[in-house]
Image 1: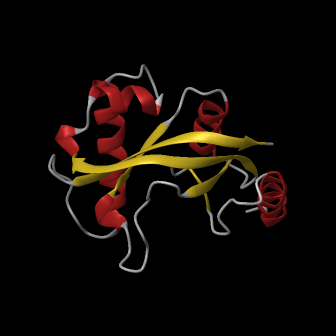
Image 2: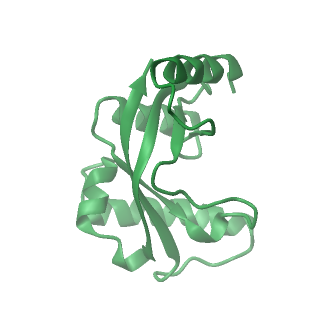
Image 3: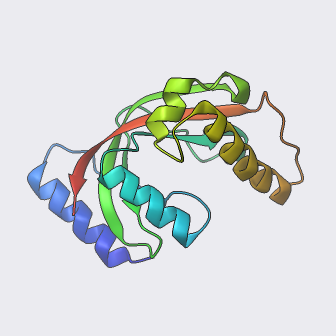
Length: 151
């Protein structure tokens, strides 16, 4: 992870926005370099304005996303590409994620069918690592965001 690019982006953002919060999270989407690069590009071009995460995988001391949270999105090489601000957060069962949310995630053909297939596969991999089973009622954290700063 390129801490220099993360720090440089945050300093530049704070210089332009002195009232911005002091805290942020920095992370890449997905579980591979290719996925991180692809999804970071979707954020940069405005296609991806939402994400979903597996509620079960949050640690006790790891807070859930919240409105106003600032995140630095990283590419597959760990370089900062954009800062996004969380605009809404809702936790729903997997089988109640909406077509609208799937569309806003911007992945594949943007359908709910595609979203369910891709996320079921992704969540199954996560659960396998902690010896748990996927089911259609697992809680999913649905987060919307807007890009507030780009490199």
